[in-house]
Amino acid sequence: METPRTKLTIITPEDYQELLGMYAEEDTFKYIKPLQNKTREEYLDMMAFRLEQSLKNEGYYWIARHNENKDLVGALNLNPFRDTGRIQLGYQISRNYWNQGFATELGKAGLDFGFNQWKLKRIHAFVVPGHHASIQVLQKLGFHLLDGSFMIEGEPPIEMYGIDPE
Image (cartoon, one colour):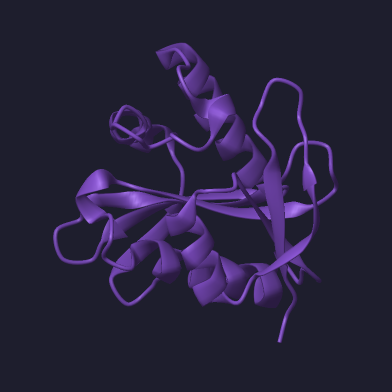
């Protein structure tokens, strides 16, 4: 997949080291408690799981590289959210590329894939209240806040957003 400024490819083992670097950046998982403070091995297991999920077409995890310098811009995921039966859109942007519109750009590509290739009827996003930057991106993408929030033991409440194909 491509966006105006990036090329997205399914995660490969060759991407793991760079992803570990992005995961270690300050505030990368500030609002995603389950992904905070994992060991290197736990992150590697997570990446291997995402690769397997992508190869089985059960979910997707793409690496976004800048078209000009091939730097890692971030990652985009479209995958099942826990055991809810819902497919979520998510993104992580490398700190060097924050506040430049890349999350919105990657999100548009994920929605296009989800609705036009994976033929989803709805895509969800789950956000901790107060994560204003992510909520703003979701609103730009056309998501709307759905009724109710999720409570998961030991974690802050999360709000559920959704978008349907146009």
